[in-house]
Length: 520
Image 1 (tube, one colour):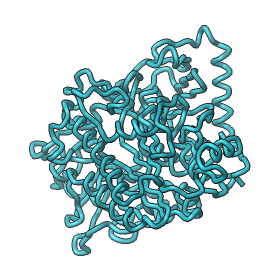
Image 2 (cartoon, one colour; image 1 turned 135 degrees about the vertical axis):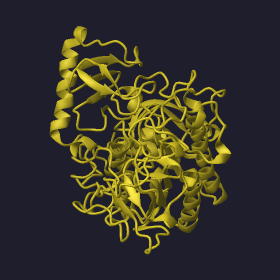
Image 3 (cartoon, one colour; image 1 turned 135 degrees about the horizontal axis):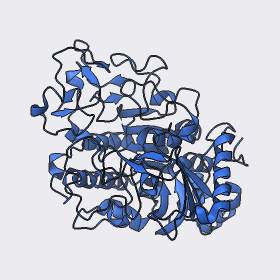
Image 4 (cartoon, helix red, strand yellow; image 1 turned 180 degrees about the vertical axis):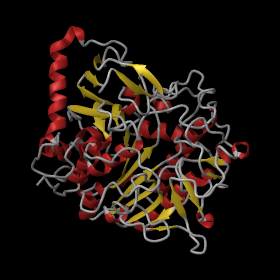
């Protein structure tokens, strides 16, 4: 909902005649990767399986949303939508980014970083990127300047895992260069085997410390085979086990350097995404094998971010938003024991499906807002989504939003802050990886699932890329049937027709955000 509806409430409730965001608080978005609704204690994970005290503390001291969503059930489209405020299905090329893919967000496309910089914020992204680097038609120049990248679309600083760790190359990118790259050992990345004797997960399977189950059988690094091929860059290569520590280290450095200014940090975790390789000190800390252990590792990262804020006396002026880029998956290409050790743990909680699907388990995830002294602790059932963070945060920072920017991002800042009477978004479109024409459309308690074909691909946590028969149009009452088991379409044909028409109108319109007094 819009600022003009809630401005009097903000000012009266918190700071008298001064608006809550007048002080320009710091904002940290912690985005988990492949984390399901049921993967943390405050959302139902049992302590005997794993413990998440730091995330649970955010929820206890902040606002825990029961209808918190990402906009897509895979990583690249959700990240694109979070940064641009646009549904990813509106733009071609927003599916899972390949290792050598160009930057999906090119200079000139407005982002949350662009607009917060206009408000005086320092901006950074640290962690997994997976949105491509370089110019269209060229892609990344691994041995030169990796432009355009985050710094050309609104970020002052970046320290990245450039793709995703099951794809090559395993190097860090700091600003526009591969870190520690030796020019005498240039980095080459490609989609074809560079030489007949190049070791792969197929030819050298007996050397792997983690075996692959499907697809991840090309170049081997650190005893793990990946998607794609690369050679060289040996001095620049990282160890999988050290990723989480490096994200925290770089975040602490950057926060200390920029604490005198308001700052926006996108902390992009990789922990739960395959290959799941926890640091040695986290192994065996859960009953769920490596998948559970990396959840404990991510929880540690959250605790470290809070520690840093408290030590720098920044916690009372910093808003943390904890979310995930999509729902959970069990076997996603490696034999890491995730399925075998799942036991009674339910990664998606009470919801159906997971990563890659338009069922609730694909996009309904943990979603927590925390700001000591400003956000009243509690639980909210308002519908909120990562795509709305751009408009919500930018509007409250006092920056006008161009009419043709952030076209699907709603201003729901009141709901995010827990303002009494504030509403979340009225409706939400959920997509899978895109390109298949599959959509979920939630409006209130109702959800319409529209698959492009009766036979649609659906990835469940307990299965691996299983084809599942689904009806083309399914109507669900989420209040009565959160598990999406009963199709009410036949007995509610008028409602199905109405929701389907409304969904199609939004798809055709090219936008769903209305302009308002703060958007020009």
